[in-house]
Length: 340
Image (tube, rainbow, N blue to C red; front, side, top):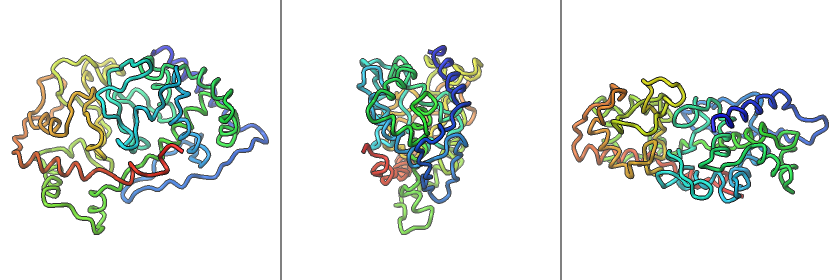
């Protein structure tokens, strides 16, 4: 897998050198009007992949099309469902022929703001991220070169690629189109946001207590889950296990001190994205809160911020009530994100 990924990324890099549209090609370069919620920065958009209406539309079509899987049975949306904040509701999503990997599918909400992709941070650019699930043996199991061949022989896709990029499908344009659509998946209109922005929406008493607890030193949740996206984008060992089958960040850095460290996830829409943790081993929010309340395992790399919290039953219920206010109903029902 690593060899295939390296060769594919090398190919994409070479193609980037010649990514300019062909002379006279019918490119539609109308910019996409990306709506950013109050308090959110505008995400970084690569100069070589400006966000246009044509690119977003192409990316959405590709996102929902099983043509990108080996047996044409799975699409990106098979594991990233809009109703679940573009996550999945099983510990590990089945790939082609029912094969299972070893990690829980993450939400794609606000993926445009991530500095490193995947739970171990192994991909540093959203425009390259699609290579991983498309080529992974346990996911879609299709070489990008074969995906490109299918797209260029398809009756509908060549025209879409010409309008979006001024040339036919290639590993470069395929991955960039998918990234363009994913950059539009911005979530920031939850009940919490409405209350924080001074709208008429207010939090109920238990939710308000839970918010105060979340941001307090007693619970310490905001030490890691901070900022507009409720994550500091760091990699931490949260003491889930004393011995990890999945090495996490160590898989990338080869540093033993990174064993069991995973990217701190956003908590936006957290009530929709069960099961939790990198492997989907905790099935409910109650189980997650109880894990942190216990202080976690004795793994030597466990983050020093973790310790028994001694939360009462009321504290835990209040905290969960607050976490549920981070659900963004407009995000999971937005017709712009649905399959056409």
